[in-house]
Image 1 (cartoon, rainbow, N blue to C red):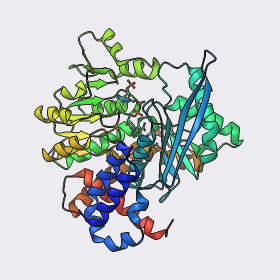
Image 2: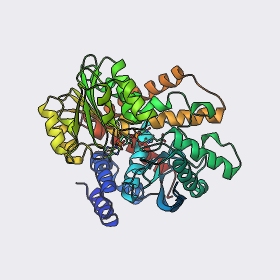
Image 3: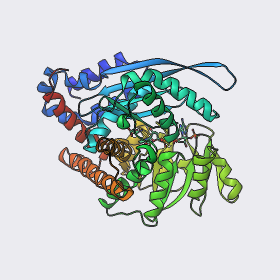
Image 4: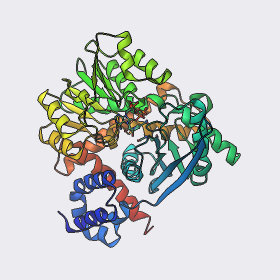
Length: 450
Ligand code: NDP
Ligand code: 2IT
């Protein structure tokens, strides 16, 4: 390996020993951009370009005290990692999940920089969240938590500073409570300070659908480049949240048949095709568990999770769409998918394939749509929401969707041509990293030592 790259990688490992997810994300990027580094070695070294690329501009961590419905005081930990403002205000979602820690926040913020660069829109990279667990909490408790979270976060964000949005456990309900508290504290209607708002007070049409729809636009482009299409294909999806639901919707519109979805307890397999209206009712309205699907469709199968290899990847499929969480698709799962003849995998979630799984799938010639590219439709539409807020104007659903489609087509082209140029045609994991890295490296050079 290039000695400068190797040195930075080793130092990053030493400086972040207890952050395995962050190191996994950094390693993947640094190893795949080696050909670019080789051709600019001295120049990058002189300005410590890689060292600056892997060090967040700022990490904020704070106490979030709130009172539950029983009058008990609970203390959670909040985070915002403002990783890079190279190409725009910090931008990225908020995750509320008990697994949240600094390593997960940093890996997500790091990946966000590259993803946002790929969109071609002026947005930097950030991520935030809390180890708060929204499961089983009342509406009132969710509101109390969001208000306390924002009472600290407000001082660090702003529509030209840092613009949070949703992620796991944060949807339009949470964004609404966060927005209300921000407005109350700042005494200003800063519409663009958060994205993913409901459409009747400044949200963008098609933002809710954008990540899932974008994932399918990307998948369609990737398949087309290899003489394939979605018509009649079998699709399996992990997760049953925002990304998974709208991926399922668009895959079906494009002529594929989605036969499985999951949540953190297990997966449903319905060989007649998933009844998405029912999934939406269970997850979006009742906030229930996916197992409830069986009450209406007793012939569907339910496979419970027993270990880290999710049963959803044991089902025979043409296209697998991991849309739940990081490292959910293991090497064992990858082997099973290959055994069953999988053609393509497109990552709706962030870093859902373990590094071993990715390496194996690429070796076996499976097409991979990497998260930074394939799920960028969500944040791209967030940027479109920001521009509508600045203009004090709305686009129609069709206008937003067609902009999203064009952005996803462009992202695929960038990944594909970067891969071609650097001798790894068809490896979109490397292509995405290279295309984004080049843009960021140029911006870093242009802006001096900051
Ligand atoms: P949601 O909270 O709406 O849904 C998350 C889904 O994933 C749920 O079905 C959940 O199951 C499952 N899940 C979450 N954590 C785990 C876990 N540790 N193990 C197994 N299953 C899990 O989140 P989103 O749909 O918004 O996000 C899903 C993924 O997509 C995340 O990786 C996120 O970072 C990524 N993403 C989201 C974007 C967005 O716009 N929302 C944009 C780009 C990427 P359960 O209900 O049982 O917890
Ligand atoms: O991972 C992601 O890209 C998101 N959660 C969406 C971020 C955003 O700002 O819309």
